[in-house]
Structure formats: structure tokens, C-alpha cells
Image (cartoon, rainbow, N blue to C red; front, side):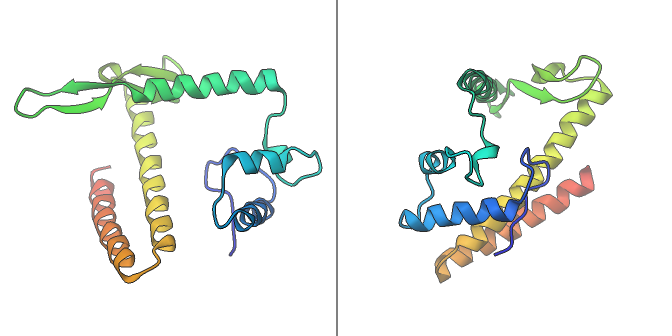
Length: 168
């Protein structure tokens, strides 16, 4: 199977080599790929995956805290609407550009065009990620029932994506 880095990936170098290493680890572990096994395999400096990890523990710890902070911010939702039509919405939205700079802003304060455009671009990226997830679902569907579910999901997401493209 041919592999490449997903668009926007932080990783560089030979994606096929990385994919082959991951596949070998999966096969060696009864078809299951585990993060701990990936990290352990990548520890030796000569391993193909080694360069993709931060091995300075102080730097890695700080990066982990940043990831935790991002997860924390993404996990908070607010209840919007009236009692008849309440729904959850993200309390904060990540804006990558704009007059105020990169960061998280209260959902309802994202008002300038640049920030709105950035949020819209983020939505487009997440729609692309949705398409990738659906493609992955289709690849792993093993039997007729799973394939039927995957086809229904594909049709639904295709319809949604087409309608969103018309809006955006």
C-alpha cells in the first residue's frame, strides 16, 4: 500500500518508510498498533521513526502540557438557544490569524472578517479530515454489513460536504 503524509502534517521525510515501520509494528502485535510500542521502537537513534519524536524530556513535557491545554480548551462547551432548542457549542474557537493574533477566542467574540475567515478555513480543514475518516472506515470495513454502513456514511457525508461547499 502506498503512503504519504496527510496535507498539513507536521511530519517530513519519507512517509512510506514511516508507514512501513508502523505496519511492521502492527503485524508484530497481532494486528494492533499501540502508541507505547511505537515509542519504544523509535527510541534507538538509528530507527526510521526516531527523528519524528522529541527526545529532550523537558521540551517534550512542555509540549505535552500545551497539548493538554488545547484539549482542555476544546472540551468546554456552552449551552446556546432557548429551552426548546438548546444545543452545545464550543466555548472557544481557535483562530490562526487575524488582528488579535493566533489563539483561542470566546466563540461569540470571533467577529472580524479575518478571524471569521480563519475559523471558516478551519472548518474546511475539518471537513477534509471527515472525508479522510470516512475513507478509512471504507478501508477497514470487513464484511457486507460493515460495507453497507460505510456506504451509507459515505453518501451522507458526501451530501453534507456538497451542501457545505455550496454555502462556503
